[in-house]
Length: 296
Image 1 (spheres, helix red, strand yellow):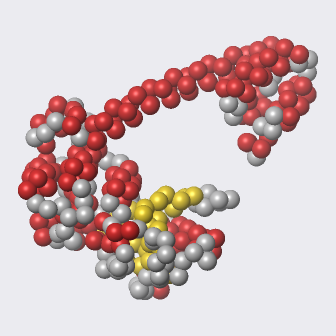
Image 2 (cartoon, rainbow, N blue to C red):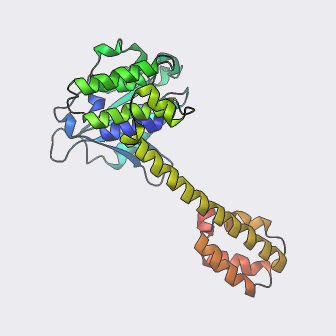
Image 3 (tube, rainbow, N blue to C red):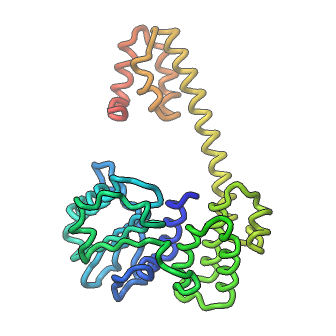
């Protein structure tokens, strides 16, 4: 199951879910917004950042990591990303808080010693979904998260129960329709090998009435368009490489730069190569089109 996608959607739709889960809750929890933020000039991308609303004080930023696979470098990466982000935005926030969500303690890195002061301090909280207790005793939003770790043989019954509860109970700040959509989304990802009819029968509702089906249909169409574009790009690359080889000889050393070209650039190269007489002509063309900066 694609847990990263599931939790991104959960927090994007219901940012205040995080504060239902943890002990540390700001007064303006419902006004926070969830973002995925790229730290420029580095390879870091922080997928779970909860930004406070404008004009509040203190301005506390929350960082959340959902980890469903064993990764011994998790805490090195997590705290490095936080430190770098805060150093770039030190005038924007007065405090920070970190949350790491695991399905169980078994997934947590084994060596905690190097980060013990942070992990055991007041600014970080670790959540183990399998230790939260009986789902029926949890807030309705937390039950969604617990559904992601429910064993396959129990998940259909649990999902149907959540749908029944959503139809009969007050879902609070969670929109009833969007809540049911998320149940369906989790079920679709959890049972990705089942057909749509089988998932519908399992949940007792029609998926085409839910957002997950609409998004899946749109995603499928988009994948088809992208696949067609990629196939066209690969055909153009192959054609250009053959033409260059016939005209100026072996271009293997420059192949990676040629493959980094866009379709428009390939078409321009296809016209320019008609005037090439030696490999230096290709090198000069690539430099003039600044392809060297792509491959570094």
